[in-house]
Length: 182
Image (cartoon, rainbow, N blue to C red; front, side, top):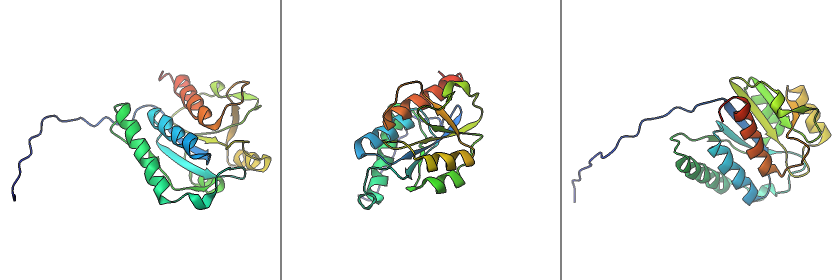
């Protein structure tokens, strides 16, 4: 009862995160699509995932609490296990778009914006990138103006207007492809 023995049967080597460092800021969307975004962003190797409050979010903030953050972290853990990674992205606390922009540190900053002149594939990413993704209905003109003031470059993902959770997968895959990782 007072003694037990542990036998190490296998040792896992720590593998540091590889490739470009991607910080993702996504406006809050409905719970299932948001969970999907966290899952896929984790599988695609984001360093941090920041839930953002922006003007057009369609969820009620009083329904979001520490339980949700714990659920999001559980999703990230399962996603890392799925893809064989032994690190976790930082799931940050819910914050305003303004707060996130003021704190984020990345060599490149992009905001996904349907109709933007520049394509995501035209940027030569190096070292790190922050990606801002809006809610259903996208960022307001005022928010886009603010993002531009903070050094975010508006980019598009082609002619199609994608759902927010699809934009996560498409943009992260595009960035990794442009960086020669895929």
